Image (spheres, helix red, strand yellow):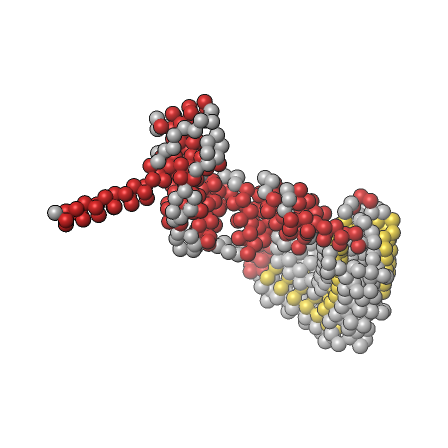
Amino acid sequence: MNQIKKEGLALIKVFIMTAVCMLPLLFVSPLIAEETDEIQTLREDAEKGHAWAQYDLGFMYKEGRGVEQSYEQAVYWYNKAAEQGFAEAQNNLGFMYKEGLGVEQSYKSAVYWYRKAAEQKLAEAQFNLGNMYFDGLGLAKNAEKAAEWYLKAADQGLAKAANKLGWMHHKGVGVRQNDEKAVYWHRKAAEQGNAEGQFNLGWLYYEGIGVKKDYKKAAEWFGKAAEQGLAEAQARLKELEDLIKKNRNPLLIIDKDGTLTGLTDKTKLKGKLVLPTEVKKIGENVFYDCKDLTEIDFSACTDLTEIGNGAFESCIGLTEVNLSASLTKIGDGAFYDCISLTKVDFPVSLTEIGQGAFESCTGLTEIDFSACIDISKIGDGAFNGCTDLSEIRLPATLTKIGEGSFADCTNLHTLVVDPANPVYCSKDNIIYTKNMNKLICAPGSLTQVSIPDTVIEIGGWAFYGCTGLPEVRLPASLIEIDNGAFESCTGLTEVNLPASLTKIGERAFLDCINLTKIDLSLCTSLTFIGPQAFKNISPDAQFTIPTEEVKKLLKDSAEAP
């Protein structure tokens, strides 16, 4: 009998404990006296099984709106709606489990409900599930899976998911590192008003990561984030404003490293510009198309070492440039198409002039290398099309002259190299390699030429634009004619090619519009004729061809695009 009592008491205890544990999900508190008619109606609809009403009532309990706040009741009603497949309720129930509100904390249960909602394409749930993967809560940590769910949410326009993706692309976490995509996703978030996205986009502009460095745009996005109360944005905005105030010229934007990165208003830049001392580098395309800029004075820039690519491109009003004594590099196309520029004195420190740096500076009449003791490189086409240049004297330190460096300089008559140069030499105003095996370039005003028998190669664009040259005697030693070697030699009427020749490069005689006789009769060793090698020559041109193989080479060249 006692044994039966003990067993009965044990069962009662189990029942009581079970009831206590189930209480949060079973108990429904009576209406409080202050409940409005709307709440009472909502409760009635919820008790009838309407999922939307169950969700709304759960939300009311969670927030304490119209009812006394109760997380347990919120969980109860969210659970009712979630079981019916109501995605918003599933997501909110996941949150309650994650935070342990009204129910025992369970990351696995949170993941379960987040996934239910995420699979119904609820963006908020997709983001939350991504967070669980990212943090490794309730399942194995997996940044790649996190990125997949963030992407699903971001594609639906969820700003915070886009911001998270931007961070992951910048850091290379869960996705391949790609700063351009980081900019893309942070911009998506920022344009939707996400404060963190606005700050992050501002930071990318501030540092020049994935975009061109731009303090004006950085300040714009920092400002938007700061207006929303983001303390970090407020601090960075003040720092940026202080940095800009340090500039002597309010039109110039100079970063903390001394790089001139941009202009606040290009239209206000007129006349002479004196650059301040703190400028150490001029960034790419900073002064591009500043048509009213007439003079640049670098004299105060004692630490300036580099002028970036395209920095002064198409500054058509620029007439004078006083380069800094500390300058070592002039970038590609730095002064391209500065048609009013007349003279450039290169400083003692200069080591390199980039490709096309002064290309199409048609007003340039004088360049002076006399002070240069360290210059080693002039890039391809550096002075191409400088039609008013008449004299160039190259220093002994020069070890690399790019193809077409002085091509189409139609008034150039003096082109010499310092005799002490170990790589190059000059003879009759034509530049050769020191051993006279390769002809590098000829002056554009040339009217006659006799190429030495030592030459085995004529370099790229060597005679480009020599419009007054009616004929050229090619030596029996010649093996290669490189790309564009005689391009636009409009006065050339006849060319006899030697038996030793094996290669005629692309565009070699392009636009030689008066070329009427091309004698290839000795060229039995010819193995290559490049595309457009004889394009746009005289329509009456006659070829003397030795073999069917050479005939085919000519045909293929003519048909090549």
